[in-house]
Figure 1: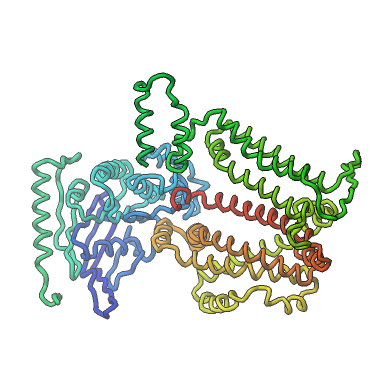
Figure 2: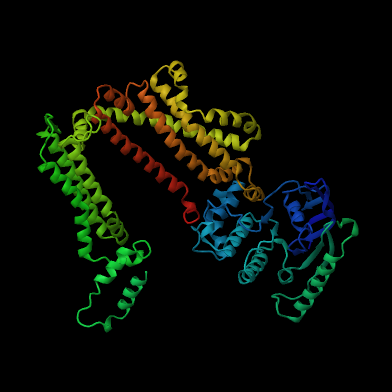
Length: 259
Length: 377
C-alpha cells in the first residue's frame, strides 16, 4: 500500500502566557499508509491533539512539513475529515441536516443529497433524522459527527478522542461501528485517544507519544487478527507492555523542564 | 400534608369502608389542594365538576350583566340613543347600556364556546378549570367598575369613566379610532421592520469584522443608550413628512438593541463550530450564514423583544408629539377635550394591538428557535 500522509521533522512551539516556550511537538516523523488505522496515544500534554490539528490544517507547524497525497497541508479541506471530542454538532440543525451540512459546506448538496439517507443507515440512526442533537445520546451524536465527516468521502478521517466522553458500553459499541465503517469505506483513520484498550482494539499501528517536549517515543505494530478479543491473552500482553511504556514515559522527565 | 396522606390511605383501602364510601369526594378535594403537584390526577374531572366550573366562569360576567340592568342610574348624565346601521341592511337604536350588555353577552358566549371546545381535550379542560376563578373575578371587577364608574359616579369623573362609557367612545368614533389604529400599525410596521433589519445587518457586520467592531461598536454603545425620542427635534426638521420623522425615531429605537445583541450573538459563536465547518470545506459565506447567524438567533430574538418594547414607547410618544394620526395622536386630541373615556378606549385598543403584535413575534420566535425546545427552560 502506498503512503498517504507524510509527516517530516515537524516542530510546533507555543509561547504560553508566562512567555515560556512550550514545545508541543518536537521533531515528529511519521508516515501513514493508505487505508491504515493508526492510534496516537499518550498522557495529556504530549501534543497528540496538536499533531491531529496540524494534519487537519487547523494549525500550522513552526517548522517541518506535513503532506497528504504528496501535496502540502496548508488549510482545512474536506479530504481530511475531522471528528471532535464532543458537542461539535450544530445544535440548530437536525441529525439529517447536520450530516447534510457536510455537503452544503462544499456546495454539492443538490448533487449528492441522496447520500444522506445512506449514511444515516450506515451509522444506524434511521428514525432519528428529525431529532435535534440535544435529543439524542452522546454516542449517537458522535456517530452523527462521524457520518458528517464521512459523507465528504475523505481520504483520511482524523478522530480527536471521539469517545472520550462516553460511558464504556457506548464506547465499545461505537468502536465496533467505527471498525465497520473503516472496512466498508477503506478510509485511512487516525485516532487520538487516552484509552489503551481502544487503541489496541482498533489499530494497525499505535504511536506512543511522550510529553515535554511532545515527541514520538515508539510505534507499535499490532498484528492481532480481527475481530480482536478484548479479553484475550495476546491483547492483555500488548496492553501491559504499552502501559509499562507509558508509565516509564511519564516518569522519565528531563531535569531541565522540572521546576 | 399528613392529613392528605391519611386520606390517601383511606382511598387505597376502600373495601374496609362500610356502606357507601364517599370515594368521589376525597380525591377531588385532594386535587384542589394540590393542583400543581398532582397535575396528572386532574385528568379525571367529572362532568358535573366541569359543568360547574363553566357556570363559575360565566357567573362573574352574569353578575356584571345584572349590575348593568338593575342597578339604578344615580348619576345625572344623559344617555344618548345611537343609530347603528348594520351593513346598510338593518337599523338598530342602541344606548350605551344596551351596547355594553351586548359586549357582556358576547364575552359570556365566548367563554361558553371555549368551555365546550376545551371539554374534548384533557389538557384544555384543566386549563379552563384553573382559569375559572380569574375569569369570575374579572366579571366581578367589571360589575364594580360599572357601578362605581357609570351608575353612581363615585369614582372621580371624568378621569375614571365606567366600561359602558368607554364603549361609547368606540361606538361614537369607532371609524376614526380604526383609522388611527391603522395609522399606528403602518407607522410601527415601517419603523420596526426596517429597524430590525438594519439592526441585524449592522450587528452581523460588527460581530464579524474586527475593524467595524473597533469603529462602530463604541458609537453604537454611546448613541444607543439615548432614548430615540430625544432626536425628535432633528427628526422633525430633517425629514420631509412627520410620518418619515417618526419612522426614523422608531428605526433607531429598534436598531440599537437588535444590533447590540446580534453582534454579541455572532461574537459568542464557539470556535469549534467554525473549525467543524472549515474541515467540512466551508467558505466564509457558510461560516457567516450557516454558523454564526444561526448561532446568534437566540440573541437576535432577545434583541427583537427588547426592540419591540422600545418601539411601542417611541411610537406612542412620537404620535403624541406631532403626528397627524395614530392612537397616540388620538389620546392627545381627546385629552385636550377632557374626553378621558376616549383616552381609555384608545388605551384598550393599544393593549389589544400591542399584545397581538407581541404574540405574532412570539410565534415567529418559537418557530425560528424550535431547535431549542427542551434545551432551554
